[in-house]
Structures are given as structure tokens and as C-alpha cells.
Length: 233
Image (cartoon, rainbow, N blue to C red; front, top):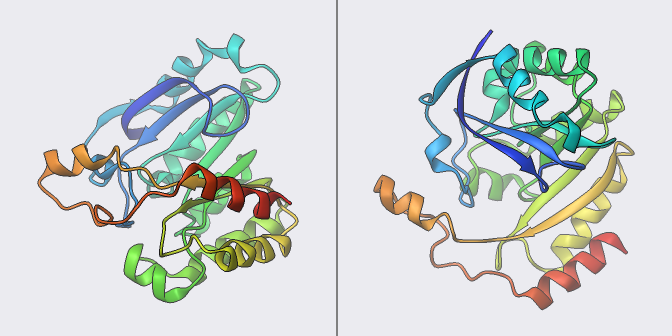
């Protein structure tokens, strides 16, 4: 099984539990306004077999400990679901934890087979309305909720993540609404709020496209602390 890979991060600490070998895959059908990796939208990249990815990860096995392992990110890994399934099956054969970083925009039989060998999902819930999803993401909010419903029905441990964007989803009301949503799904055992950052601006400039949130402010440290108290309180 061949996949299109953009890059690897050997000792990742923010893409799932523990120390992780993160594989960034090419391809994404969405155009999220807050996307940090527009260079991963297309289908370029370098070809790797599932065996090559897992062999590369095994070099760092001693660092994984009890919680670490392989994370597949992107781009949107669901666009290469069969390849991801092959990577995760090989990883599990080698006793390595598997984690999928996704927007949850697709749920078909190939994705369901991938989820069968996924130990944890990092689910990016960007907003809480159909209107904002259509305007700033490019998919349906309902499709994400359907994905979350499937994770819950199959008892797949899930971390919900949301990038906080001032004026779009940064109010106390917004965060309380997110908190109420995740309460409905016992599979969600962690919620992370991440501040909007603009370090990706250089990528957009190099690609000759406009960063949609270039004129939006970034949240302050104090604001993030307040919102995190709400979501974790």
C-alpha cells in the first residue's frame, strides 16, 4: 500500500498522548480559514509504503513509553484511509499505539475500517454552527457530528480540539456550548483549546494565496487561560 507523505516529525509532543512519531499526509478537501498547512492541500509529496512508515517509527520506539506511538495527520488523513489503515495495522502488530488527527469530514466504509485499528482520535471541531462551517471550512457541521456519533458508538477514545479565533468562536458562550456538546459523548475524555497563530502566513505568501484570517486578532494568554478554565472546570 502506497501513500503520499509530506513529512515526518520524529518526537512530537502535541499530537496525541506521550511522545509520537507524526506523519503528515498529503491531500485535503477542505479549505479551513485557520489552516496551518496549505502546502499539504494537493496530492504531491513523496511516496512511501506502509512498511516504510512503520519501520521509520520503530527507530524511536524506546521514546514512546506506555502512551506514545504513531500519529497520522495532514492534510486530512481520511483522504488516504486505506493507506492509513495499513500503517495502523502494522503499527498494532508491533505493539505501537495509533492516533488519528482529523477533521472528521468523511465517514465511509474505508474510514470505518481505519477506525477499527485506531486507538485514539484527535477530532478538530472548528465551530458549532452549519453557517460557520460552510463559510470558514467547506464541509457540513453535521458530517462532523455524524463522525463523532460513530466514534462514540464504537467507544473510540477521543480528544476534541478547537482553534480559538477571536470574533468567531472565542466567547464564553461559545466555549460553554462546546462543553455542553462534548458532555453528550462519553468517548470524549479530553478537550483542548488552541490559540490561533499566524506563523503559517509565510506559507500562504510563498504560495501566492491570501491567508483568510490575516486581519483577525490572536487570542491573549489571559483569554486562553479563562476559556480553558471553563472547558476544564
